[in-house]
Image 1 (cartoon, rainbow, N blue to C red):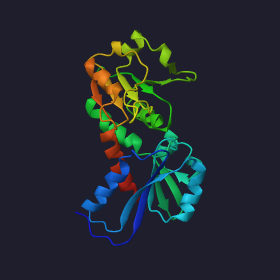
Image 2: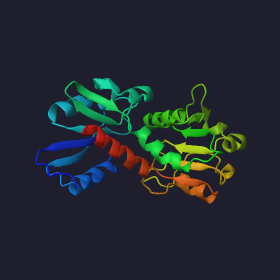
Image 3: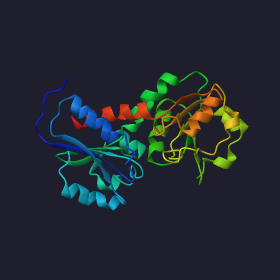
Length: 249
């Protein structure tokens, strides 16, 4: 049990349309559990990242998380980056230091902690659905674990697959499929990434960064085909704890 603190400390999440977010409840419950009086966690819903400067100027803050769609566009507003965040090219945690704002990426930590217990010998290749900031952290983990991967995009660049290209041979080769797109998030719970689910089998592992709903249509279809499935809640908890550690270091 932590010590009672009376000093006011404000933390928060910046993103767009983030009323659904888990972070505020998670940290609010944490502050209560640790008896950290005067600690608060708020959602800062910004319709454009350009409003970040005024947010910082007008508020006394102790730490921030960053979510969709600002994990990449936040970088020019920061004074420096942690080495991992720099390699990934995306930030989801900001620490306020005497030298200025420092960006970190705890998504990679959270994903690796979640992924590793599920890995089997046949999980040799991975597909990453989506190419946003979160997908970069997932790619970084696959690189760290020496798992070859391919991005799948609606507008593929060189070296990526389009959704239309995905066929039996591709799905059979890539036994890990990670959904890093927002497709299927509440309230659009019937939506799912456009992949050929008929070729998924019990050797596949399907991971969805989405945690609301608890079981997305993507995961439900994978489960029906016998695949191992996991949503993004554990990843989010791991990354939140790592962010807390960074803020208090």
